[in-house]
Amino acid sequence: MESIALSKQQLDGDRMIVNMGPSHPVTHGTLRIVLELEGETITKATPEIGYLHRGVEKLGENLSYQQFIPLTDRLNYTSSMMNNVGYTLAVEKLLDVKIPRRAELIRVLVSELARIGDHIVCVGINAVDIGAFTAFLYLFKQRETIYDLFEMAAGQRLHTSFTRIGGLMRDIPEGFVPLTEHFLVECEAAINELERLLTRNPIWHDRTKGVGAISAEEAISWGYTGPCLRAAGVPQDLRKAQPYLGYETYDFDIPVGTTGDVFDRYLVRVEEMRQSLRIIRQVLDRLEPGPVMVDDYKVALPPKEKIYTRMESLIHHFKLIMHGIEMPVGEVYSATEGANGELGFYIVSDGGKNPYRIRVRPPCLPIFSSFDAQVKGRLIADAVAVLGAMNVIAGELDR
View 1 (cartoon, helix red, strand yellow):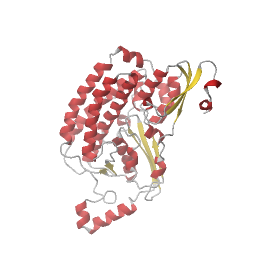
View 2 (cartoon, helix red, strand yellow):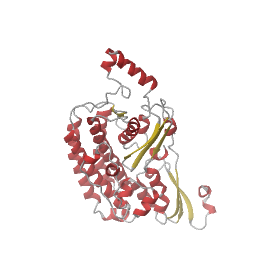
View 3 (tube, helix red, strand yellow):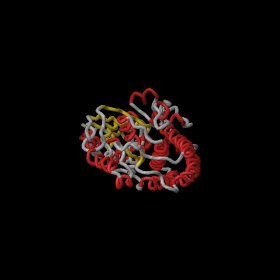
View 4 (cartoon, one colour):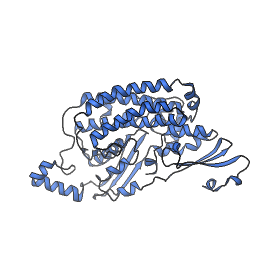
């Protein structure tokens, strides 16, 4: 923090301090990076986080297990569905609850849609930051379709709160599957257009190749997960390594890079979008009618018609609303493969209505921690490219 207090006059020669953020279009949220420069060369980069800290984990200690779900939307808000799924899986693991088959399939479906939407933001905005504006336009039309699908399913586009402990808030509506099938065709065509614009573009190569390169050993040492780790050549994906929601039954590949630079991170995310499309097609082939919530009324609210006509259902409804789920005493850690890497939830239960402790393991924090090492000795323009390829989301970073 001493470097922040230094003034330009206190530094020698051409060395100076520049604030990158928190109010700047390339900071991708409320991030502040204090750059120490010698000319245009970065000699030190000090990330300062906390501008979007809302005390999510502490709030969780004063909310019931169900009430915490909307707060997960505010973590990685570009793929909130995956946060919903990751958290409810953790609670269900503690309860030892098995959700219905249709609910499991729909969770996979919306998670992969959210992964595509997140990668669209990362790749599209990273390209805009560097100067390739057209790619952004091709991709964002598809992201709007994803949001249309989320709105159909959850009633909201960004903060969905779609899952419930034991399943989903409701089934997907009529028209959801045809629109998804249309999206699969349109999105694949848009990805092809994106690659024609960028993948062999010499200007894109100049701005991304060799920039932010990191070895597999260094990436593991920093605690990288997700696309940034796979871009460094490590084929680690929790959907394969620690399967959940039946991911072991799906046919898909794990794309990996070789150098870990901005270009490889771009390639990995583009291929991951294609693999997500493959998974979604397999989900649609498997979808069959069925319930989307467990029928254990000590975990899930009974249907309204039963509440209005049966005393036992009314009692269950009252107990769940007023006293919450009867949780076992214990602790659990559950991790899912978020769009940026390992999204983990550690929950401690003392048997009460509210969690005794909730801890979120955000994918962004270890990646962003390496920012100084990634940009030291490079130009400011390279820092912009590296930050965009890291895809730092301040909501989950600060929590």
